[in-house]
Image 1 (tube, helix red, strand yellow):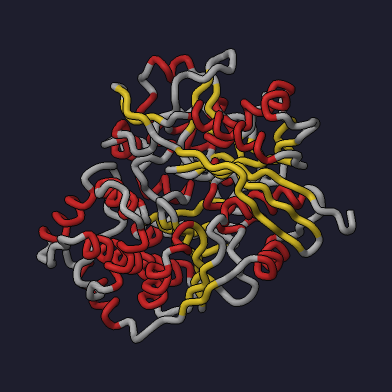
Image 2 (cartoon, helix red, strand yellow):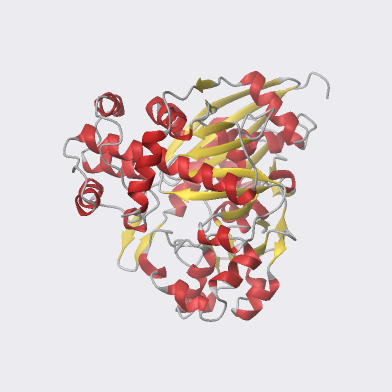
Length: 482
């Protein structure tokens, strides 16, 4: 194996686009190349908002064709959503989008059987209206659910179509609110009390486990020469992205930025206190026995929706306009469920500012600055709260994901947190995906050695905090009293 360089296809599916990347890994080397990118456009039909999963699968096949010879394939995606299969293994309709309204009010029904505090103590998962558990409760009375004999999370569904084999990868399973983060197994007591049939789920897989070989039909369609194994990676994209945080010393916080901002800490054990639940922190499972202790923040979704409403203007001029707007003129709660649904985002942001007695942003630059200041403020709150709740101080914040391209957001986050920010890989999820595959061939070691390789091979940008944090504390206090 000495001197060998291997190629790995990383299928990385985000909420707005998918991509197939090829990672080439050798002793001391790591290169990542995008070979295919495709849109991920949800579709609203009379029944509600759905994922075009067949379009996604077609994009995956196109990407594998463009990838050329590879030694393995791995898939990661967003969490909680899933496909239902009938007794013959056929898909029962397009998977429901997590932004669909079907789970409105469902959490209260679940808590009537298992109170929220007990549910958190057992699963460590934050409240989000779209958690898989609430989706199952909402679907229970449907004809489609009555026919279901198997539930596969999105990466596992695509893996099944590629290989014919079924499994449930653990890091993604931990977002269902049906996994015990202490045992890293199903929360059997919760499932029993809520009458959830865990037999719907395929057996659990861990990152690095084999997930089958590409079917002959897939080989023929992609032009690949078999056998080509599919490897279970950390299939929740945030788990893969956190694995690619280039932290080699000291205690760190991370922010995985994209459609969502996931801000928190990497821990050895979950934090299951009532105070943690009240702060809406989640304990999701990561690579090599770690726990991703984090808070979900609405993220760049706010800006993406505004850009869509404005007709798709170039981001560069918007950010330059935003940089000229006075700091913290107006801020909103970037975690507010009021911003969850698509459509009318500039108006909703303006209304939130009006309702709280702040100056109402009018120009595109003012709206953009309001969003970025609000995200930086939410990042500060999450990093501060995580340190306090976990008794785990940090001295640096690592940012990975799409937000690393937004220098203004990175600098504002450093200013707000009063800590240096290191911006790492934009395609962090794909890098984490590739590195787990590379471990199967002995080209990557434990998490620490992965991160040393990332530090040596990937460009990093450091942002130093400017000025004091007093104005950010004041803004946080103002927001807390509204």
